[in-house]
Image (cartoon, rainbow, N blue to C red; front, side, top):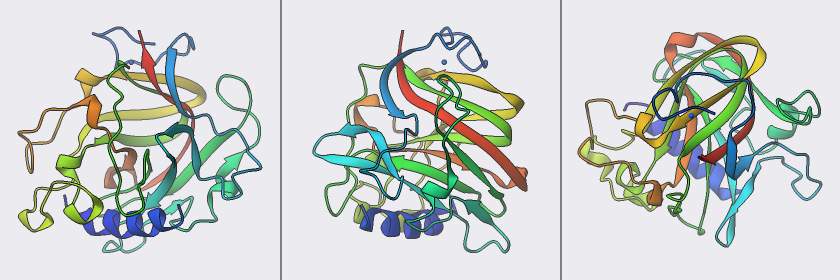
Length: 244
């Protein structure tokens, strides 16, 4: 909850520049690569039309979504690469060795502390706010990862977003940022696939906890690295919403 200031600061900056698992076993990694991709968020293909390497592959509505990162500015020594500046994503995008096709992938590392650091992507920025997008035709989120990190994968809806970002949550109430999330432990030198059905995402017991997860209202998602990580290094690829 307390990382709201850092996340809000980074979002404002970033926006200015523009499980295959069964229902019961969707939190178990699989390296089969048989997940049916319904909406590819990003497989980090290098695109000359994207000089900052921050635009996600998926195009929702009129506007192209974009990646952003944040740190806890109140916790000394926290860091993340790609750094919270617009020109860092190309440096973190590796050209080959990806999970499925041997192509590009994103390498993320840093030092966590306080209320965590992270990387996320919004789907539809309308100029002054993030608008939600309907992903209800899909069944959950899937991605590939390798390295060493504890990750909290978060789904954001307007109910958890401050009003000044186009959400419905008065930040003064202290109820914002209580995202639906699922915890993942990545500890492998080899690529592993992780897939999570919507039902696997839950809330912590605070804040706006009486709001049900609605895949019709997804505004952004995040990979948050909690303070239990200290140092972390993880590679990410083939991030998508899947269908059964």
